[in-house]
Amino acid sequence: MEKSRITIFDTTLRDGEQSPGCSMNVQEKVRLARQLDRLGVDVIEAGFPIASDGDFAAVQAVAAAVPRPIIAALARAAKHDIERAAQALEAAVRPRIHVFLATSDIHLQHKLRISRQQCLDQARDSVRYARTFCDDVEFSPEDATRTDPEFLLQVLDAVVQAGATTLNIPDTVGYTVPAEFGALIRTIRERVPESVVISTHCHNDLGLAVANSLAAIEAGARQVECTINGIGERAGNASLEEIVMALQVRADKYAFETAIASEQLYPTSQLLEEITGIPVQPNKAIIGRNAFAHEAGIHQDGMLKNPLTYEIMTPKSVGVPDSKLVLGKHSGRHALSLRCEQLGYRYERRELDEIYRKFVVLADEIKHVHDHHLLELIRETGTDGHRIPPGRVESERAAAVAAGAEEARRMFPGGVPAEFSAASLPANPEHQPEQEDYLWGV
Image (cartoon, rainbow, N blue to C red; front, side, top):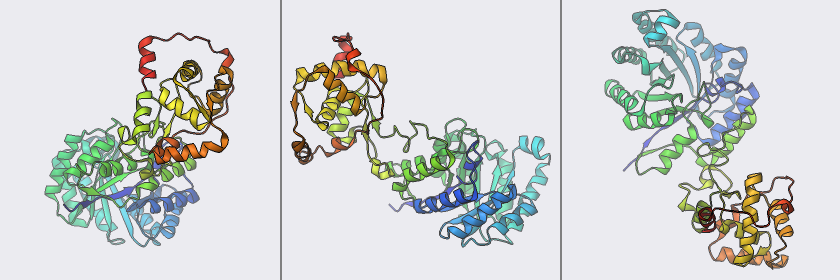
C-alpha cells in the first residue's frame, strides 16, 4: 500500500523560541535552521517579523541561508504585519506567509473585541492581501478547538476562497483530546477542497499534543506543526521527534511517511540544548539521556541477551551513539559481572556474590557506580578472582563478539569522578531475601 506523505512544519525558531529562556539571536537561528535542513524538515517557520527588528533580520537571514525547505513567516491578520513578513521573505526560494486570527468567542470578545462578522471579514481580506505577495499562504484560526464549529467552518471556507493553500488548525491552549480533535479534522477535510492541505498545531497543556497530532493525521491532516524537544509556549508544542518516530516505529498502524532523516534527531536536539541552555528532561522520549539507558537488573539481563527485549527502536536510528547500562542499586549480577570482565576481572559465583553484596550497599549510597568506584571496591574487597591479563582483554572481547555479545560490550557509560571508600561498607550487609533473589536472579 502506498504511504501518504506527511509534511513536517518545524516552528522551533518561532513558537519554540517563545518558551521562557529559549530566545535565539540571528546567528543561532541560522545555525539551527541549517541543522533543521539536514534533518529534512519540509517547512521552517523562521520567526514573526513584526515582533522585532531582530526577528525580522532572523527571517531574512534564514531565508537567504537555507534554500531547500519552505521558509514561513508569521503575520497577524493585519496589513502591516503581512507586508513586513513579505519583506523578510524576499530572499526565500520557497516563501510562505502564515496569517493567523483568533476565532473563538472568548478571544473575540475579551482580546480582539470584534464581532464574528468582523473576524470573518478580516480573515478573508488578510489572506487575499497576503496572496498578492506570495502564492503559498497558510491560515490559522487561533484557538480553533474552542471555536464554535459552524463558525470555524465559515471562516475556513472564506479564507480558502480568498486563496489560502494550507489550513492550520491550532489547539492553541492544549484543550482538545484525540477523539474530539480527530472528529474536527475529519469534518474540515470533508468540507474543504482536496487541493487545500489540512495542518495541525497542538500544544501540550494536558500532555496530549503528540496524541492529538497523530489523531489529526489519521483523520486527514497532511501537515504537522511541531518543535524539536517539544519546546514552546507554556507546556510546549507537539514534539517533532516523537511524532516522526511514532509514524516510523508503528508503520503497521500508520500508513504515512516523512522526509525526516531520523538519525539527525539526536544531534538536532543536542544543538538546540546547546544554543538555548535549556536541558532536555532525562526521561524525554526518543532523545532524553535515559531513553536508551537501563539500570534494572531484569532489563539489563534482557538487553545483554537481545536489545529488542527492551528497546523498540535502535539508538542509532535516532542518532544516539548507543544504549548504555547504568550500574545502580537495581542492577543485577549479570551486568556487574560483565563490567568486571571489561575491567579485567573474572569471578566465580561465590566471589562475585561478595562483590555484589558490597556493590548493592554502595549503590544505595551514591546512586550510580562508575568504573573507578568498582575498581576501588574490587581492591578493598580483596577478592582478585581470575585476573584477565591485559594482553588477553582484547582477545576475550573478540571472542565475546564472535559469540554474539557485541551489544553488551558497548552499553556502559564512562566514569564520572567522585570520592568514596569501600572500606566503610558493612562486611555482611543485611538484605531482604526476596530482594536479594530478585536482584541476583539476573
